[in-house]
Image 1 (cartoon, rainbow, N blue to C red):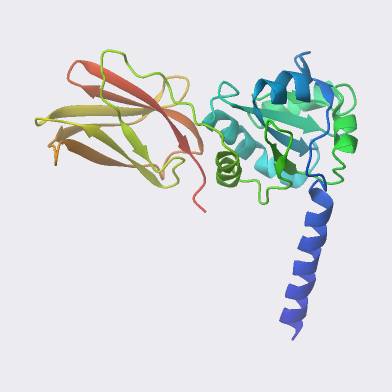
Image 2: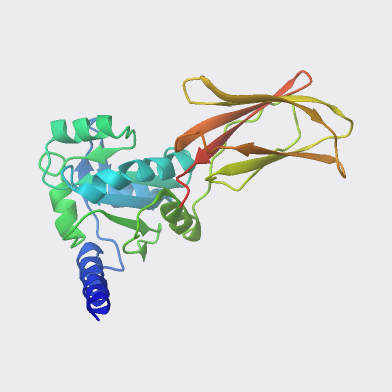
Length: 267
């Protein structure tokens, strides 16, 4: 009986938190903020009117869950091309200074645009969207419709799913122009393992590397590849790799293919 009562109270608390955290709005109001790099961004003119899907992370530097999920928001930002696709990610801080947000971003390896609450207009954006708790991640379509009022939990996979549902497009690394063949990566993002599949007509040696964004090799292997129905498929174990964005580099003969891969926590 005590256990059931505890679970009921816990569920009630979760529902109350959800009601406070999400924005009650279904149509996005306009705001203007100044990022920690002194860039002025107006939601309507600079983003939505440019046909961008906008993903906002309302956060506080002192909030425990904000710290826990900060890098998840970064991973989702990287997955959609770091604001180079039809999706724009923006961190909106509450009650922090520019220096505090800069420090927060440095601790949690955040490179996406963000604004402070006190000096960058974040507090006004909080009030405009009627957000009273954090973290609150919302997704807005170009027509100003808020398609997701609150993504919980704000894990990379949940954010990515919400953005895809809203029409967001992944951005891959440019493929070597001398190699017309397409490489398939699945699943993306990946947790414990992923697979690559390449067109292959005859048996040959394929060498691959998994590298971080600084070019350091984390995994490598030579494969004696034998095609099956015109393709070769290989599985790569990612259990030893920390969550983040990496580069898969394939060497097929004298040709090189490079693709971006996204590793997330195994839930």
